[in-house]
Amino acid sequence: MSTTAASLKALHHLYLRLHDVNLKLEQGPKRIKLKEQFALQQEDKLKAVQEQITQLKKQVQQKNLDLQSNEAKILDLKGKLNSATSNKEFDIIKGQIAADQMANSVLEDEILELMDKIDAKEGEAKSWEEKIKAAHDEAKKAEQEFESVKDALDEEIAECNSAIADAEQIIPADLKVQFERLVRSHGAGALANVAGKFCSACNVMIEPQRRVELNSGRLVFCKSCGRLLYQDEASE
Image (cartoon, rainbow, N blue to C red; front, side, top):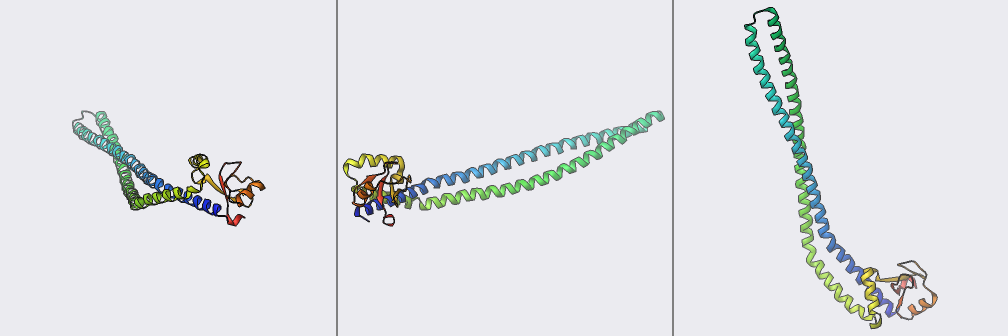
């Protein structure tokens, strides 16, 4: 491998390293945000269950009121039963009492059923509360983990940028603008090694004359994708 190729390979590796570190720096806050959003989604589910519990309790309250109203009505009818002036009136009042007692029996069954539903929903709410706590704990853990490495990542980025500035001295002044444009467009992909006879970025064959130029240590850009090429030792 020529000195130029070795220098370009080292430069490429520096850009790849910088890309990886920047990716970690970007992914940290995104990962935290995703975990926080997940916790908020769990909270929304808890609120929905809590609203269901509230509605069920309102139904129980209303049915209890209906039950009390019917009990008062039955007491009133029993009083009227004693003062009935005819068998017909007696039978009518007795039938009304039986109907109200049947209605109360149905109400009691419905109240018990609603109470069972409330118990089940309260158990579900407790489960969501535990999931929410776990989700917030995960978000907090992710935040702490990121904060513990953030300074080191910032230092590594500074180190990479300094090393890149030194390594880029191999780029002649007349090619600087072209190379900087490549970096802005492709980042770490501004450079590509020649794998066999092909550009590893676009997989287009490099012309024999340009491969000769590469082997002689000249700077060569891929005619297809524009990347700055270098001949890797394994590809020679």
